[in-house]
Image (cartoon, rainbow, N blue to C red):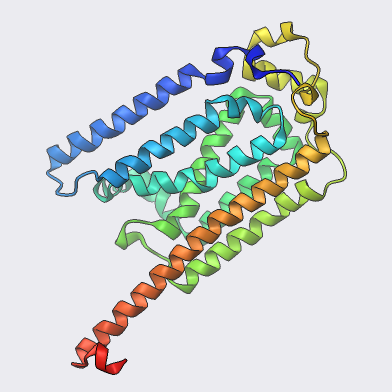
Length: 301
């Protein structure tokens, strides 16, 4: 198999994307400092929030700027891993890294407030996200998006924003915006898991390679030219088989499997947190009820 080094440093490490992320990271810390001082918010950016934001930026660069992004154009299973991390993990880190006062400032902006009120509703959020995720993995749509740099970037941004809306109902940090509790969160996770299954099942159980991006030399060359640049034509490569020992069908099935497994693991972790929060709230309610009736919790037990 050939080494990825033949594509060059810029294609492998996307230095311009790294500069953009560094600028966004600097702007985030600058804004959280300046706005907090200007408006005299008492809530500082915590060390945990700073670490979560930095982790989100590192993962975002690994997904879209490191050699993993290039590998996702060579083998489908890498694309599956990066796609799941992009919409199931990074949005959670992003939501939890923003201080509550900054979220309130953003959500009180007139345009954002109106749109957010609609798109953050649980039913709307879960249907929109899963519809866009599944639509993206329809072969004709996937191949078309992959062959257009701007369409690919735009679709990724829209899907990421919809993922934030989907996760908001589960991990919303603002009490006044929480619209799901207890069993409703469990049902929400279950519905998400069910709605994403058909797309993964179609990928896993297909008898043939569905995506021309990974088996059609002409389409693959077009996709790689956009990813690597004009220098790709000089490499005389005709397909991704130079970089993987798996057939296109095996690669596709593995991609569908890893997508489903990683997604289920993330949902399982969130479900555990939901049950823990549910139990803790139930205990607190019980203690308040006992105190209300002047009962000693120890004696009651």
